[in-house]
Length: 193
Image (cartoon, rainbow, N blue to C red; front, side, top):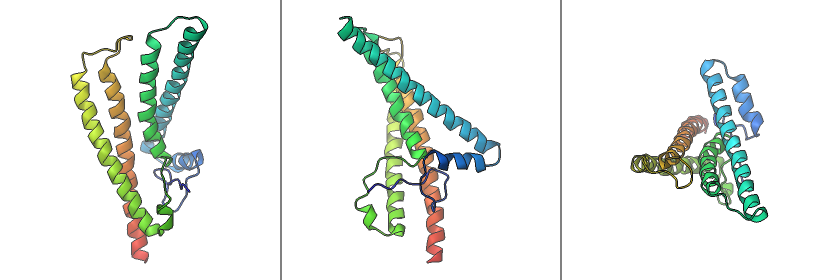
């Protein structure tokens, strides 16, 4: 059974409830920084949704032109690939924000809440470490591919690595917030025991 973790910013005692959990954070929050964060995440979600719609349109053009018209449109393959990569890396951050990353929890379900929390922290630390390594690699590749363009569209491959880095930096920030929140929750729970 898969238990979704609470959305980032939701107290650890609450369970994930989809959009309502995040909406309650943004509505219940006071102050300009929290409202700005809400607008930022809405913008990221809109960008990802538009990338998904654009990818579907491009793939439809590709399939329709190839099979219905018998001609190939060369730019559709690379364009759909670039859009898909943007969706993956932006989507990873959005999924972390909603506590909706796919996880296999067969063994975790057998553990007590206290032990499970520590395994959740360990998982977040490992995920953040891997994401940091990928971000470093993405920045290195941005430098190497700065003057290399895709073969069918006038887009530098550095932009592709930039999207990866941006998505993963957002993911890392959310992971670090989740780790800090889990430690605060673990400290409160441990002191009560």
